[in-house]
Every structure is written in structure tokens, then in C-alpha cells.
Length: 355
Image 1 (cartoon, rainbow, N blue to C red):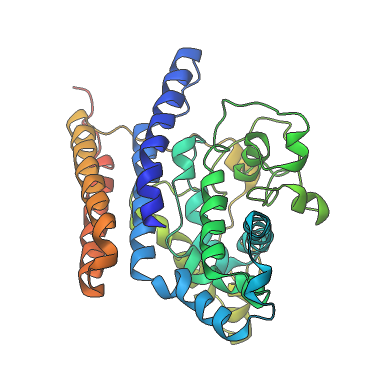
Image 2: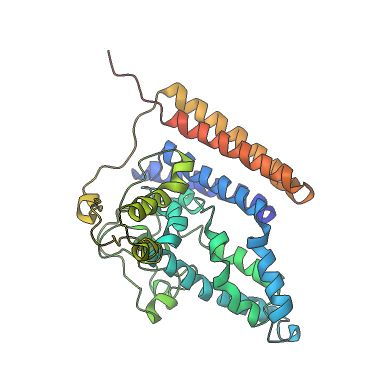
């Protein structure tokens, strides 16, 4: 997967530049420097985690397919079989995605993708580091149906790459396509914290699943993006760990083991009986200003330079990753984490008050 991203990345960057320039020209710039670097940092981090967790990315699926496939490989030949694999993957991904919004432990892994308070093509690259590690069981039906491992891997790449273009505010309604596919309009709803939009439009390619299973909402009022409890930080490690920390707080606030366990599988907004912890309000969230504290100019320039150096280093690493040992890849991941933490620290530097 990381090799495919290496080829796709220049296209992504050009598209982001075009979107930024178009937004500036139209007086509707949807980008913020710190937010964009934060989103791209999470993208680099997610790929690093994918490299050091091949068992969860593809290994478990391959093992299950080899041992438990119920249908012969001869049924999975020809172009139609590849298209069917994409549809099956998208269907399984719908249920993973829906569970990730309805179960707190899965939301903790998925929340990273929703933390940006902007909505642009860089948001698409704000990928979750632990999502695939937790989500692999949802694709077991594909292995049981005999979908070959290479079909599964390519289908996952197609579904992921498709979602890039739907993260934009500059493409409006698309008529009948909005009723069938996940489009920018449908996906804006998914990323919004407006009460009527929460937990809607899970489909990655096909929004038909949402219409069939009652999770569809049409875009109407203007969207407010982010999470109900804002991240309010440029620290990438806190971005990954924020909701896990919240779950630990809730578990510690109740003495009953039954309730401690329920915290993990109940909805992300569920609070144990008797726990006195503040819950965020969606109404208050809509009125809250976007998090964008000013950093001094030198810190912003240093953050850009540091991020570019890390990104170039990652490109070289990803190209060689399959030939490197697990220890070397793990060391590279640790170095990347430290570097991205440094980028976040630079963006968090307070600006000096005016004299």
C-alpha cells in the first residue's frame, strides 16, 4: 500500500495546491497552515504504523483465506471479479465505519480522521494509525467467500484512494450521483458536528448502504467540522490518544467493573451511571471558535522545513521498507514520531504579545 501512495502522493499534492489556489481566488480559502501540517502528519504516522504492523494489514487476511475460503479461486477470475471485490470491500467497510462511530473503543481509533476543523483535500490524508489494526475482523466475510488476497489488497487501495476527492467544499451537489455514491456533499455531512448530521453517511464509495440501513442524511444547513469535543492541539500523539484518555477517565469514574467494560463498547457519548464528568454539548460546539492559535513566523517556517524534511525521509523509507528488517522499520517509526511531535511543538509556540 505504501508503494501505491508514493505514486499517488504527487497527484494529491498538486490537487491540494489547485484547491488552495481556487479557494483563495474565490475568497473561500479552506486551508490553515497548522491544520494542514497536522493532518499530513497524521497521514505519515498512519503509514509508518502500517509498515510495522503487516500482520494486521494483510497477514491475518491471507492466513484466514488460505485456511477457510469456502469458494474456489476459479470463481475470482476476470475483470468482474475485481469489481465485485471492491463492492464487497466497500460493504464490509461500511459496517466497520458505522461501528467506529457507534462503539467508543473503535471511535477512539477513528476519531483522528475527524479532528480537523477544516474540510479540504488534506483532511483526506489525515488517516488513523490504529484503524486497520482494530478493523481487520470486519473483512473476514471476504476471506470466507474466497476473495483472493491480492483482490482484497487492491480493493482496499481503490476504496481508500476514491475517498480523496470527496473531502472538499468546492464541489457542490451532483444530482443523481448524490443518491448513489459518496460525494463531497454527502461526505461533508459525515464530517460535520451539527446535531442532524452526526453519525451519518458512512459509505466510502457507495452511499446506497446508508440509504438501505437508515444512516443517510442529506446536506442542508452549513456544516461545522471537527469533533464534538475539539482536539485543540497540534500534538500528533495527543491526537491519537485523546479519546483513549477520555475512556480511561470514564472507567476510573465508576467503581463497577461491569460499567468499566460498558464504557468501551457503548456509544462514544455514553457516561457510566453515577460518574460526574462533563460531557461536551453539540449546541455549544457549533458556537465555538475554530482552534487556530497564532504562532510566531519563525516557528511556522521552522515547522514547514521540519515537516518537508520528514516527508522526504519518509518517501525514501517507504521505497525501501519491504527490504528492511522489522527493527529498522520500528526505529524509523520512532524517529518519525519524535520528528512529528517536534513539528507540533513548533506550531504550538505562543506568539509574543504586541509591545
